[in-house]
Image (tube, rainbow, N blue to C red; front, side):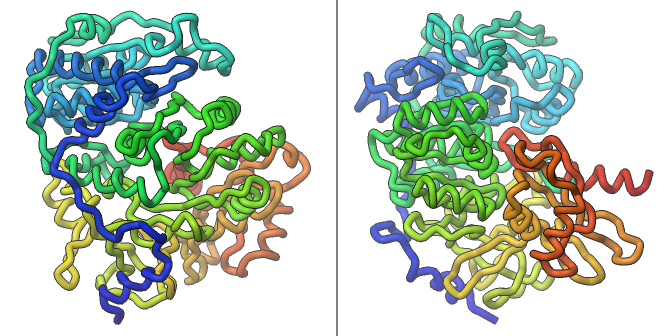
Length: 571
């Protein structure tokens, strides 16, 4: 059995030159990096949004006035405040205003409807929510539905249009043009008050002196959860700040760089590796509210974007445009992300045509984004990378928790300063999430992977996402990666389907590239797969879909597809 020391040191030979192995995390609030940026370069453009520049001075002033208004509503240190909005300048302002007021940010997926929002209100016991006018009504309806269980007493509502140029944004997709400028009436909040953001800004209230420190709770993002209701992950200023600081040396972030932020900022990756890292390291934020490959390509070229944290589906879509100018991505020094495997064919084109290595990483909401990441100079494909700065990792038997040797598949455990403090009001779930091995407290990720002799980790799949075909274990992620090698496959999701003889068989749900639609049949893909995969692994069933269901952050909802398959089997 390998020791934890062996697994920790295996990757030392591949460590990036000049990157420290440990970081000293200052005992301060995340607000202070934002404040310093406005103090040192007040008139520099801190954020660009669809044709309008916002200076650091303007952003800080808006955050201070909002923080003062929140305290005027009775917000106390440690109180939770819900944020419900797309990517926009108001998200950056609201996030920092909540922290400046000493409270805790609860970022919520703006696609959630009232029925889903009830859980976030009730579980976090939030008294205040901040929302854009187009979806604020959902928050108000959720509060009304909760009745006596409702804690929400205030909703602050802003207009997305107020962040646009006075003349209006031009050159945007038609759906954006129809959505962004529209102003909506204020919703009714039962037994509560609704406030216009603009009125609070005009009030020019200022907050009390800053009191928050590094170990105070700062963020309560909710996980999607494998079972039951979503759970809040308790992150302090310190746990978030580790990966914020680590992004600088690892990703070569420099003052004056420009970062494209199109991954949702309510999601941990967009929040930490996009917004917070950019602010800390003096980069300009170029923010898009939603994904559109044409808008993204134009932004990369126009603003000479140097860093683009993303998810592979965005890159797949961007490179699916045959008209993209090869010079569009010339300014990029870093392009990478995680959440799904990057297909070999896409990564190869990215490198061969554009000269860029896609830098994959791995992390969870519980770990403030990366615990593993590939070195920029030697990024490997289909690889999570090596343990990040200050991070230890193990692969263990999921049942016995015994560390496993090189090459064997087991559960990935991680330990580091970025790991969360536990699940909000879920003591039992928190206990179950951690294990101590050789005196080190590790978080159980629930993901299956393996470690090679160089200390690089690869994912096998979710602990509960495995297909048992005649006793052979099939890891869907591996089949998906192979399917992406077929020139007709744009996207693929592999699930289990019932088989009277084998118990379970492999089923592939596939989105074809436009130029192959109508020219490739399911049988063609099955025949191709049979030639390229082991006999127990290739899909016995292939179904074409026009699109795969995804979360707002772009992850494929494979559980939803698997559940639909089960229901059809029992129909």
